[in-house]
Every structure is written in C-alpha cells, then in structure tokens.
Length: 147
Image (cartoon, rainbow, N blue to C red; front, side, top):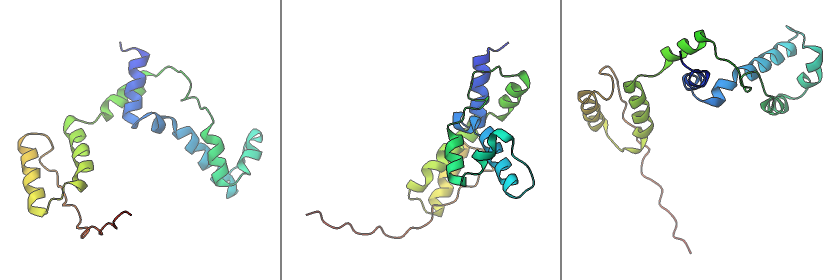
C-alpha cells in the first residue's frame, strides 16, 4: 500500500498544486459569509466579528487561517484513488505546455496546422486537438531611443 506521503503528493498534484489543494475550506468560509450577508444563514458566534469585516479584509484575514488541509493529516484511500484518475495523460500535459508556448511562436494558420500535424504524427498531442493560430497583434510599437 502507498505511504501517506505518496497519497498526499498524488492528491495535491491532482488538485493543481498546494494552494489549490488548501483553498476549498477558505472558499467555503467566503460562501458562508455571502449567505450571511443575504440573511440566508447565521454565522457561528465565534465568527460574527470576522464576518462583519469588508470582503477584502475578510479574505486577507482568512488567508492566514490554517484549515485542516494545512495540517498534517491522513489521506483516505478514496481521495487517493480519485486523485489517481485525475492525473493528466502525457498527451494532455504536452498539449498544456504547447498551448502556453503558442502565443510567442508567430505562426500563421497554415504554419499552425503544419505544426499540429507534426505533433500528432509524433504522438505528442491527441489527434482531435485543434490549435488556433495566435491572434495578429499588429506591429510592435517603436521603442524610443534611450538618452
């Protein structure tokens, strides 16, 4: 059986990183605060003063709050196996990397399609992938000479 450390790493990677993994309890607090503002819920007594703060200040305060996900805890098998099914395939990972690099490649539509065909033939991205040509941003503004 996998160790708790291995389970934690898999769950955090499936969430998209540590910050995204630990964010849901804070979002739940924000939702509860919104419900309290609309009189659809009543805040717990220990949070009444916190919920009375302006939204930006409230979010700043709870960003320092350590939830149960920030503390060492056991990862149950259900969460672990669910995380394993969320792992991106190699082709999905490659596609993400390519799409993040595409805007700087200066390809027209024909060049983009040729690039896509080459990536598909090398089995780097899925065959059904559609790559869009970067938008034409026009000529770059001239730089002023430095004095």
